[in-house]
Image (cartoon, rainbow, N blue to C red):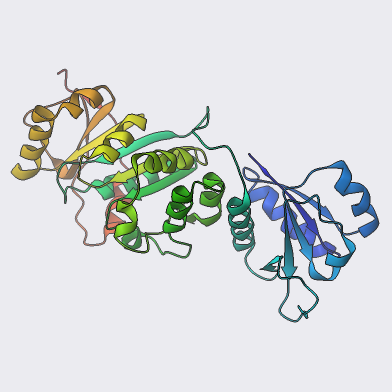
Length: 340
């Protein structure tokens, strides 16, 4: 759903700038209207329903906001707040517009009673996994995400490792994914809207900041994981999920939700042996074989092909993790059919 936002301010220059930026950069999430005339406002409010009103503090007493689900105060530090009720949350007028949008979406998400569940139209979901660590799983996930972003897709990277890789690759400037976890557990609020509000964007890749602590990821149920994935898939074009190396019930559920699974290995005997063990000793592989693509990372040569869909990725010599994934993003990710 699009949030219907009404900006109420007599500062016409500011209102025009704010509304134009929101319309240009956040049209997928917000439908924005502007009103600076209190007389016109009296006719406007009964005629159209708004979810959120962002109201200049000086006009708060002149507007009948009972029909607005969430009135918010557009605030400046030099204003006297003694006459403003504590029931209204405040949003600073002079800050980055992206921060204003994030706050509006987050506040509304917490009071919304939106229907939950997967949308009929949602992102393509690509899961990147391996039964062994250290094979370059995160590098592959980010390289694929960067490639899709370069193609003009709206891409979201979702890290579900117990120890998140997000701070290794991105500057964390937003709220932790733990705030999403809290909403999932409480079963209240609009998860998709909260994700829209707190997600960060760096280099065209959207992401959620790492959990507040290790245990936050482990308290999630299978149903929580399902809603997290489907909610992320509902707010982007491409969702790339970076998984831990375990193969528990939650991992299997993510496999079921995926459109494509990138199964990553590398040249070492350990990595290839564990991959073979997973494929030959675990019934999960047969369930996911048809949508699995084997990623032969770091120039790996697959001695025992497990699927006829293989993507070879060359080794990249750099100690900078970001350089590695950005270099690999230029790779075609072109399938090579092995004929197995």
